[in-house]
Length: 118
Image 1: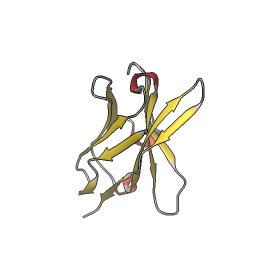
Image 2: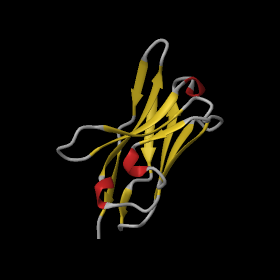
Image 3: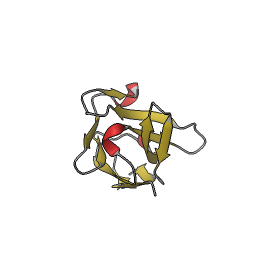
Image 4: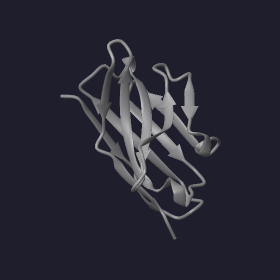
C-alpha cells in the first residue's frame, strides 16, 4: 500500500510562509525522485519543485525561485517544501509526487490546499 500524505497547507497572508510536508510509505523512498506539483482552479497542473534521490539536485518553477526550497529526509521518508514570501498566485492544491525512472512509476498524494489571501 503506497501512500503519500501531504500536510502543512492552509490560509496565509501575502508575504507569509508555509512549510509543506509529504510523508511516504509503502515503497523504497530513497529510490525515487520527489516532486511538488500544484494546480490552481481552471489551470493545468504544474511542477513547482523537484529533488533528486540523494537530494543534491533541485529544480524550481521560475516564478518561485529564491522563495521556495525543496528538501528531503530519506531516513524519515519525508519531502518538504518551504514556501516563503508567498504571493496570491501561489494559491493552489499542492501535490506530492514520487517518481521512478526505471521502470517508470509515479505515486501521488491527495493534495493539500494553500490559500494566499488577506
